[in-house]
Image (cartoon, rainbow, N blue to C red; front, side, top):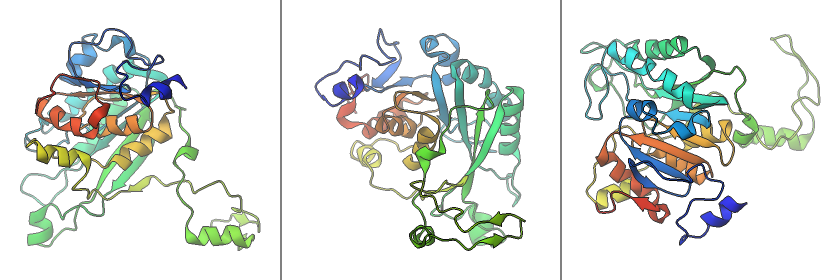
Length: 330
């Protein structure tokens, strides 16, 4: 494939001939690779002013983790309280405009607590419901990302008063204007369990009627499909402390993004909902986990980030794959 031939040549700085990035790049490109571009700016402005008009109707997946709906301001610019609900919903028309007819939106949303009280806020759930309903999107499926390595929080209620257990998951809603967007769970099969491997080797199954009233035959579930279909609870420990990104930031005294997700989480949805050479968009790029995951999986990507500091750090995910850089000196 022409795309792969050019990508394997480090000295070649032109994008692949099949690339959606052929032509004059916008002025706000912070850096680019043969597979993608990181843009500096506010996503609502760039999605609304025509900067990305050439990609309208062509994006196969919008995968993003917007600033969480906290009840207090963070340095990475979250909205607070009920204003967050309206802020997030306003992105719907922009997202739908960018999507291909069978494209998907996946939004990761963290939890929040009421200020000064051991009571969870419903703000995250209300924001997702409003975003889905107001923009006439179908909720294809809800996912949970479980991080077993997450530190106990909220500390006051978990560590000190001991009246709550630690909060260790976030929600991801998979939505689409299309009831049947592009998706293939065969692309995200998991390794069979030891018991299932033994069952396949044995060649027979504990047949009979189940409490659910299903009647299971002796040969049921004995077809080897190459792996097990995963559930919608995804467990990835977010424990890396010496990956390329963090090492680069420390060596160059750059600020680490405070809300990073594991690359495996982005890869799961990219593999599940797209194919090679599809386009993945992250409107809240942060440290650009999405872009790096898409590049590794041979998808094209566009990320948008408003913080120049976070963009500088995200360069560490790409090394010598960067072909154009507005911030080469750090």
